[in-house]
Length: 243
Image 1 (spheres, rainbow, N blue to C red):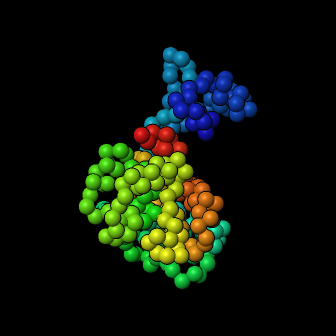
Image 2: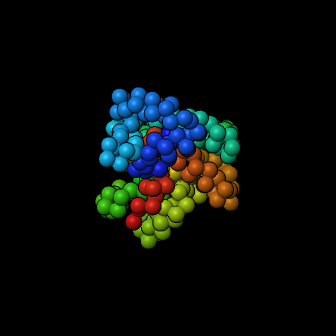
Image 3: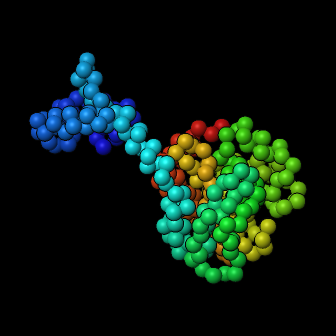
């Protein structure tokens, strides 16, 4: 953990023991043991230690076995209770979003059925996903014929859409203020995987007034960010690299 605090950190035995508050003999023994499993590497020229390639093997094993839906459950539960709304996690499957898990904090009569799928450009989740795509992939998506950002078969005002996508990149979430389903507010934020690709999204649905979007939106973005980190992604770094 000491060596992992900073990217590319290399420390001497003396520096490591000083930071951990342990005797050099104990630090030397521990480092030698970790070296045997390739978790630590030693540079004989500079006599410094850094993280070893064995860490990558462990990380891959962990990430491969992760279930995004199950990881999302506690965050969805908290979000649903905090906002008194319904929170869902949708997984990207080709050009569709499939709802794999959900939690309802308040029964208001409109819910998404688990297993149902929606076009990847549909409503708030479509904007959230498109906003955080790489530029080339986003432009390819926007050039398609079947765009459902404002409802199936509804015309798309591209100038308005691009403004909303830009706003989403700044705030971390997109929304639909009851346009597709009158009286139902939808807020969505993307969830990233370890390789930085968008795996899916969180969708919050509620019968709350439009004025609450600005207070609920950051909570949706925060929940999506927490799930992304659990999956091995760094959403903050991803956002900074977007053009």
